[in-house]
Structures are given as C-alpha cells and as structure tokens.
Length: 304
Image (cartoon, rainbow, N blue to C red; front, side):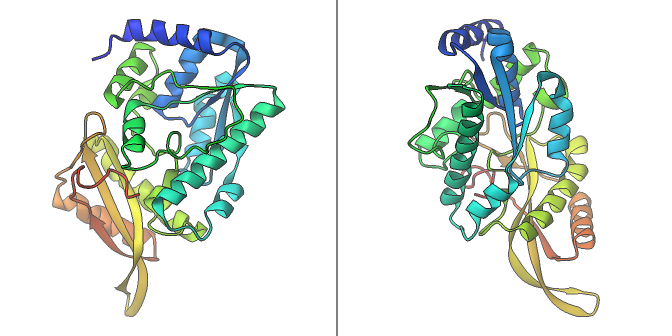
C-alpha cells in the first residue's frame, strides 16, 4: 500500500518541478481528477485552471453536481455535447468510439489552453488505465485514446503509479469529502461505452434514465464497487396488449479492489425484480432487463 504522506509530498514537488507556469487541469468530478486538482492547487496555487467538459455523455444530474462541488476553485465549464455527438455519429466500433472521445477531449483542452496562454496539462491517469491501454484490453480515453499530435509542452500525470484503492487512500488523506473519495468509478467516455453500437440522443436518454434507477436501488443499500445500466440492442416484448420492439437493458453490479479484476454481486432476486419493474415501467421503450453475471476476466467491467 502507498504511504500517503510521502506520496502527497512527492506529487506536489513533482507538479512544482514539471509545471513552470499556468497549467490546465482536466476535471471530470471523479476521485482521480479531483485529487489532481487538490495536489496541483497545493503546488502552484492560482496558476491552476480547472476545466470540466460536459460531453453530453454524462449521468443524470452530473454536470450540475460537479458545478456545485467545485464552485470554490473557479471551475471553467465547457459545453461540448454537440461536438461529441456529431463526431460519434455512425460509429459502432468500441475502440473507435474511445479514440474519438479522447481526441475531442484533448482538442477542447488545447483550445482552452491557447485562450489563456497555457502550455501544461494535468490529468488523472492511474496505473490500471495504462495497463489496460498498453496491454490492448481497451484504450482509455486519456491514454490509448489520445491522438499522436498534442499541442501541450507537457502532460503531467501525478497519480499514474496508483491503483484505485490507493487513489482512495490518498483522497482520504487529503481530507476530500466522502462523496468524492468514495465515489463510484465512471468511465471517461461516459455513457458512450454503455451503449452497444452507435451513440444517439435517443439511446443516451434511455440509458441515462436506466442508469439512474440502478444507482438509486443499489448504491446506498449494497455499496457496490461499480454499478450501472448498459443499453444493448432491441428485442421483442409486450406492453399492454401490443407487441413492441424495444430496448434491452443490461444491469451490472460488481465488487473489486483495484478494477483489475471484478466479480458480479449476488443481489437478492427481489431487488433485481424491482429494478426490472422500474426500468420497464418508467422507460416505455424498454422491453427487457438482464443481469450480467460475468466476472472480470473474461469480461471488462464496462461493456465497451
């Protein structure tokens, strides 16, 4: 396990050494990027510019929550929804989707940096991101999903040697509130990797609502490492006396320590039935709900 006191001291010194001027930090609202904001603020203070991009691929209420949580750090919020959705239009390959998202992220950060004459970028890459990207498991948007040409003098990754459980230890040592230090992981490409096939506004609306239901039913009571809903394809169902061709939603709930391996949670049948009933009743275009039992490996935690 990491010695948090020594790690924090070394990370602050590293940022001071590598960021010799105004620096942009990519903030998603998750524990990884939140730690980077705190460490960088300790290191360079007012030279830090935190930027959050609303991709349109976020969970229900996510952008509003992040604005409120980080209002004290002069957070810059960029609306990139149209840009992301237009770029993803027609794309079905999971790796291609991740690369598209990664490139648009970096291009927007470059644009914001040029406006402010900033040459350094800090991002919250952690060790499993690098292992999975370099090992060909999947391209994380902030590693394998990055384009080759990047208009920054340096990308600084202060926590890139930490596993997720160590990240949480550092967050606690920095006295970040539990809603951040214990926050469930959320993928950088957002709901784009919880939709099989092309990302559309209709699919996003369905999976966003389903995801909110799953979190409401499972987060507080069962405390999963990660839980969410994914949208698969369409299947035949019956609503009322009418045959319909509606969306299939898969529910995922796993336990894990560091995200390198994971096991499906053994949830009570009554809980799964309640989730199914809520999703199919509250989202009229959904006809089936499945529960994913697959561990990691052979599956990954996310669907793409």
